[in-house]
Length: 109
Length: 353
Ligand code: SF4
Ligand code: SF4
Image (tube, rainbow over all chains, first blue to last red; front, side, top):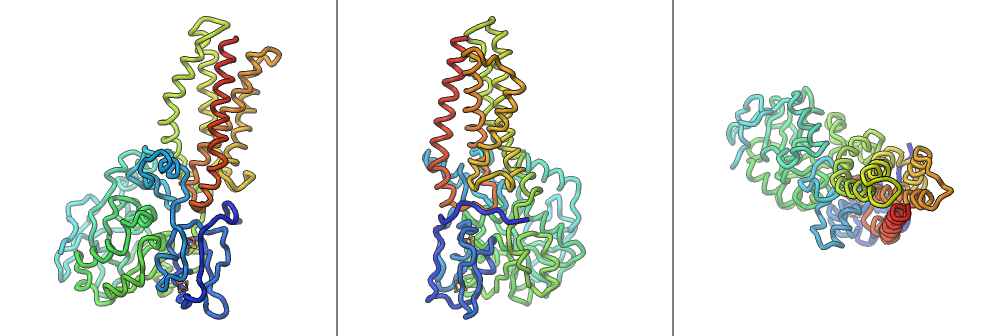
């Protein structure tokens, strides 16, 4: 089955090729296969629109070559923030609603 | 040093180690474990669905057995041990406040700091001779592998996303295939999320249903209760249909519904639902009350379905915060506007009837 993709050209993912040492940590940890390693052993963004801004690549990059504004793509969390409530009462996108302590506070998870 | 209590329902024995008596667990789940999973999926008793953090022995591990790390959310723990049937391994459970790996990594509770802390508390350096850890890939947003290595000497290997792939990952010498690294969102994965969406939606709409039912009694043409049963009851059914369209049909049909934005997909199922309701209701479209009532449901049902579908972004596995914000900037005002307009039409249709 074709992979589902979300809106185009919105994500905040950035890669600084000069800082990259080609260790591949970002490739290993990305759950959306967004980043690849090219012929000259450097990271490159192969599928930008698939990025869900989870921040795993950024967290695991030893040289801070890859950066992203990490956040959770959850409407209920955004609404909570707008209403001045705890934004993290929604938390989950991948394992999603299988387990949060905040059940019931939001219609999300 | 602190070891988990032996007095937990899933502990089947003990394993003696240089740091003390470690609880032994089995990969066979009991009916009690399965029942807990079902309850958690429906949002019952999730608050205390936790296990004690620390080191556990699966089977009879020795000082060279692999160490797998997980969260102290019971379902994460169960999925892992279930997958490792017939194997010997150490399972290091982090204290994530009973939250699953992915959510906890996002919050930072499944993070570098907790991992380093738990490594020390568990005495793992005395239990195993190697310095390798297998973490779930989905803990990546919380754990910085290079820092763990620097500060503890343990090398972090990110295992596959799904627990069922862990055995082949271990057998291939800690190599994951590209398929194991990509998070999918299959029909089955979407369906298991529906109950929790429904429970949340029902909690929110129950009072609204009651309000519509009682307001339905006002106006003509019959007496209060006859009206309530005619218009009010239909209003309740219409809203329930909207909930089904937004929180059940949209997730199921997600890949085949047009558009990228979830609210648009929900809007489409909402329009279809409203059309279906119209066929069932068969209002008198020659008169204004019937026309207005019909119009009202063509606003209210899609608006409500679109809103609920938009909320499913939180459960989906591929939406980014930037994308959700962009979607909401357009969708939220439309949903609220359509909701208010629909309510206005409906109330007017009741008053002029
Ligand atoms: S933020 Fe997450 S999804 Fe996006 S590239 Fe990094 S690891 Fe991949
Ligand atoms: S983790 Fe950083 S240094 Fe390593 S390949 Fe990715 S961008 Fe390059």
